[in-house]
Length: 196
Image (cartoon, rainbow, N blue to C red; front, side, top):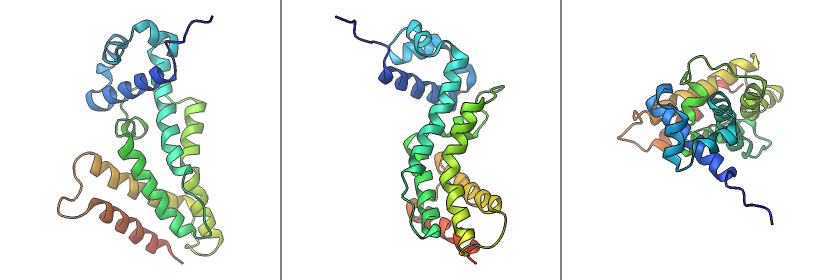
């Protein structure tokens, strides 16, 4: 009878989530394999068994962060209205950030000085944003959006969503209003500016 796996996907996920929390709240100096293992209730042997060491753990954390983020955006169904698709992608962007606030700075802040993403991390990052790029291109091709370089519209939409989400995650959401409604109104106002 084979021995049960003790270093499984559930433990891998717990380790990655805790590593993300340590990095995003306390900085790179807080992430030691000994502390990570203790915080999760496992051994450093388990961390080495699953990741092979700290550099590989950090790399996997970036891959996981972009994978989860991309999953939220890819779950948005494409319709025949690229404008509404952009709004729904913006809402999914925020849902992803709020679901995994400890992973958001991993992707978009320099929480691991000296980390250089390899090809797989780059592919995950690009794949995560591809639904946004596709919706913008569809809107421009259909004549619904202004005839400008697609990167201009992509950066506008991404930058706005990123800024709003970053403010919210850092405690600067508007207190006197409904954050959900403010966020969506802001997305719609940005989209109105790109309509042809």
